[in-house]
Length: 413
Ligand code: ZN
Ligand code: ZN
View 1 (cartoon, rainbow, N blue to C red):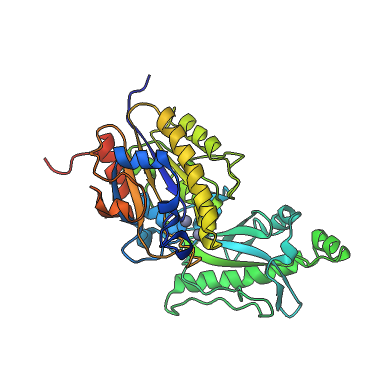
View 2: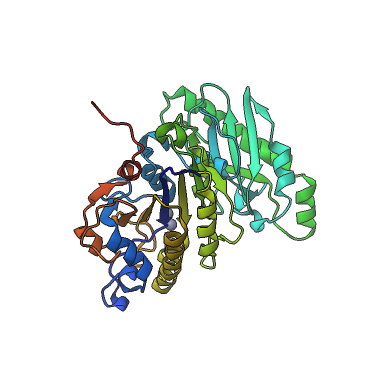
């Protein structure tokens, strides 16, 4: 019924790598057997991309913002707002949001277990004890996440996010007093004062909480304090729909990516078999993408596996993920509606040798009707550099896609 062009942006998390000795000085992409991804490269137009800028080591969140066309230097002040959005909290413009741990402290505020015995149940009741507090006119909104994690929002006019952490980040350290990084920054100073009170109140409310009494009776560390970190201010940014006129959905495996997608107004589509691990069912994710295209113009998808292989220095895990991605691409090429543009890239490199994100650029391919195919017929870090796209930045990606879709306003007459 609809004949509008559509787009799928598939981001293989941490896919880029460096040459590895045990692979004959090749990268995991170079040694993987991936006929469908290579067909994408043969029929499409390839290039190399700096997710944020040349040589910048990107986090997954900042890289996704950039690739969606939002300058992370403007819209990212900390992970908190995206973490909170990712667990379904309504982050409003000007809110100060934090990611939090339930932790264990002694009565002298020394942290003895940053993860409170990796608590798995009862955090909803603990969260309820602090959610809704009001401190110095600032509204406190708290929600538990998985295990020992949660997120906190402070809501009031005139708060700042440029503060130091209370979390000592190691066991045996005392809880720190948060301060504004710049003493002249009164908005952040107010946030710091409220956070210091919040941490103390969380101890007063949680230490004697029935959930913790029961934990103590069972020999488990109590979750008797909440330690916020990663403060960020809810950014004032236009939604993906406002920015590009495209109805967008997201199929992802991690709360962090869902948080970014939710923040820009994308519909979050949950796939129960998308586990965020190496066992994720990528065909189920591909099916969810195809389903989503029925009533969306643009689907963002993030597949996590390759990043895990990189962090673990496990080239084989990366290769296995690439083979699964190849099947996923085959499914998508065969099943997306006509006039769908498919883009495959990564949010950053996670080289096995580095075991973390590096600033190495990542391969990218654009595929679909009318795309000017180049001479590249293999999709890997080195082959794509001969492609027609050249070297681009993350913030160029959606422009290139909307240009192919021909849904862009003309700049000028
Ligand atoms: Zn990533
Ligand atoms: Zn990573």
